[in-house]
Image 1 (cartoon, rainbow, N blue to C red):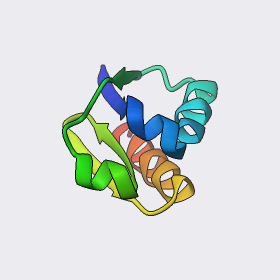
Image 2 (cartoon, helix red, strand yellow):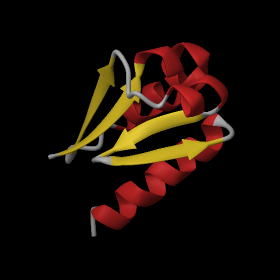
Image 3 (cartoon, rainbow, N blue to C red):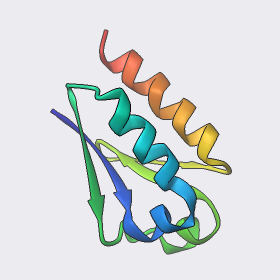
Length: 78
């Protein structure tokens, strides 16, 4: 099972929208997690981030982050 890990602080800055949408979509091969910190403070402070199965994804908006995650999920599910 692949893991998608959100930074708790980044959720408060707006990536919670992405988390909630992914949770609603319920991708069975992916586990959503929340970490206290992803140790990417510079990116976390000013952008939207997620650890996608060991790969840090960084985008300027929650919408772009969501689209990128969904694209990767669809690619990895093939």
